[in-house]
Image (cartoon, rainbow, N blue to C red; front, side, top):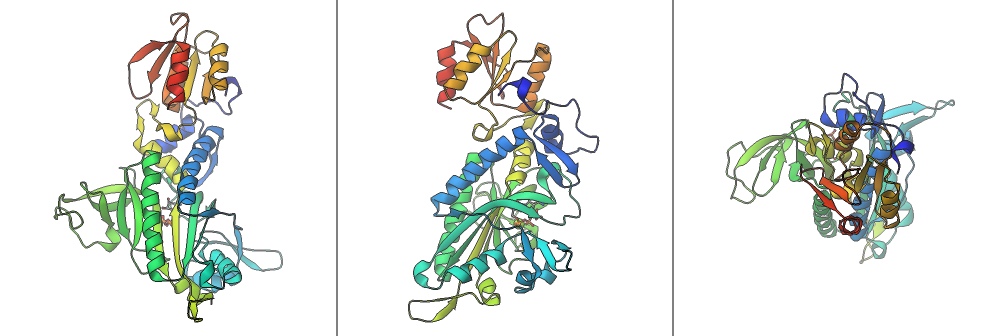
Length: 407
Ligand code: ATP
Ligand code: MG
């Protein structure tokens, strides 16, 4: 991608009400734009990062046997009435009427919609388990949509749902998804604490949240810094300073955090409410055992910036960076750009006629892991600098191509 073609260009300032680092840096960098409170456009750079986040999530969901689909976002009142959530989730759902006064909700989650699919298409234990997921928009009436893209009124969620013939099978898969989530967050460059939590409108049982420590977080967790397990303050059974009840090595400490994922063992409530039954091995009718598993890719985008930035800008982890290298031409570097492109390396080429200072400031702000400079001084070599270091070194073109190809 050439800088001259990139839409839009970077901004000198974010809006005055921007407090969170993700709000300031993603807006200034041209990754996202705010339409109104809680409502964000993902600009081409931001969409590239979200695409990479989604690809990591998709690969790990597929590895557990998940199949991707796409569900509708406009739902009838009737389906939400089947579980009583038209009433009990009224505070969170956006509802609307059509010109004939029929009532609808915009999707805030999809358990009911999935359970409807399962009761229509699955009748025997032989067809179980079912593991299906989507990436789609969720709409929620968030009263305080602050913190940049961390809390949207409209946001992206990967939501997976599974149906099983027994509690044992559900819980075995629940554990497998928990492990898959740990892999996902490790690949995303986020250190997470697995936290016991309540289920909100979903269930009375404990659920598990995946929390990232950050001062800008809205959650408070009690956790062990040794084993990275914890409890949300809603379900607290430990106190600050206690010996860790999980690993007994560390002590319980308190921290602010951002919830990036949440998994829910939902039992048979949804199937019972919605009369969704299958025939078991003995010919008996049984309700499906159900679980749901969410991650918010747009919240992950914001969280990555909260934990990976300095005073100059963003520091993207390699796997999610919008480009592998930022080529800064202080003289024409078109040939180098072509060579990197044809080697299959994702590169942003600053071909503008701005000053070196402006170009370097942009490179720091955008946070692409490697900066390459071609100038009168570098001769036929290229200057390589990692975003997270001040050291530079001169390398030949083949050395640069091979170093970037192995990343
Ligand atoms: P919170 O407690 O932060 O309001 P939640 O517990 O209601 O979130 P879940 O229903 O568990 O959210 O949703 C699953 C995931 O979707 C969350 O872990 C988070 O990553 C993401 N998410 C939830 N609400 C929002 C939001 N308003 N904006 C962006 N992402 C969100
Ligand atoms: Mg949650």
